[in-house]
Image (cartoon, rainbow, N blue to C red; front, side, top):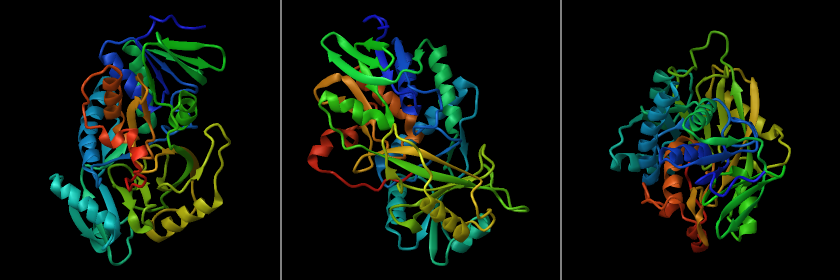
Length: 391
C-alpha cells in the first residue's frame, strides 16, 4: 500500500523521542503528519528506552545551556498536555579532581550565563549526600535545577499526543529505501508499504546513516552499544530515590565520565560510563560486555558505599555519535525537503521537545528558533572533529 501524494504534509521517519517530538511540533502547525516506526513505542533496540535520562544546565557550550532553558519549559508544557509527570528536579552534581578542565569550563560558562551553582569539596558532598563518596582533593559543582526526564513515560506520552492531535502512526514500518522525486519523497518499507509526502523529517537514530548513504550523503555517524547497570541500595542504606539523591556526572574518568541517576522505576541507581561502547550495526545482536560490567562495579565500589556491589539489572542502548559530539539538525545539502535530526551522541534526549521544534521549523521553511551553525552538516567538510559534550 502506498499513501496518496496528498495524504500527508510531512512524514517523520523514526518514532523515538526526537521523531515523536518533531511529529507533534508539525501537528501544532496544523500539518497532516505520519510518524513511521519499525518497532513499538519505547522499544529497547534504540536510544529512547529506559526509565530516565539526565537533564541539566551544566554544559560548557552556551548553546546547550539555552537549549536546556527551553527544554525545561517544553517538558513542563508536554507534561501538562499529557497529564503525567515527566521531569523531576533532583539537583545535579558534576564532580572531578580540583584541577579538572571539565569543571573549570562548566563553572566559567555557568557563571557567564548567570546560572546559579555551588562549589563543594569532597567533605561537603559527603555531608549533603552521604550516599556518594568522593576522593580527597575532589571538587563538585552543584546545580539545583539538574534532574531526570522519565524517558519511557515521555516517549509514551508523545505517541499518545501525536495520535490524539490528529497524527497517524504507522507501526512495524521497517524503512528500506527513501526515494526523492520531483513531486515528493517516498519511504518504502520492507513489507511493501510506502509513505509519501512533500517533505520528510528523518530521525532514525542509528539507522540514519544507512538510509542517507544512497541519497548521496555520507554523514560521519558511528553507532555504539553503550552499557548501563542498576545497583540496589544495601539494607539499611539511606534513600537513593528521586528527591533524595542528585544526578551525578563524575569526571574522574576524564573524557569518559561515569554518571549516575537516582532510583526512578527500576529499584536501583542507574550507573554508566559515557561513550565507552563498541561500534555496532544497528540491526546486529546486542550483548553485555564483562569488561564494562567490571568497570562499573569498580566505580560503584569506590564511590557508592551504600550500594550493593553487583548489578541488579544490566542493559544496553545505542549512541549515534558524530566526531565532535554535536548534533546534526539540518537539510540534506541537495534538497531542503529532506530534514535530518541525527547524531545525538548520547546527550540529545533531554532536548527532544526543543529539537522537535527546530526540525519542524526547518521542514516548513520557518526562521530557526535557535542558531543552527553548530549543528550544520557543512562543519564536517570544514574538519571539526572533536568535542567534549557530556551525557
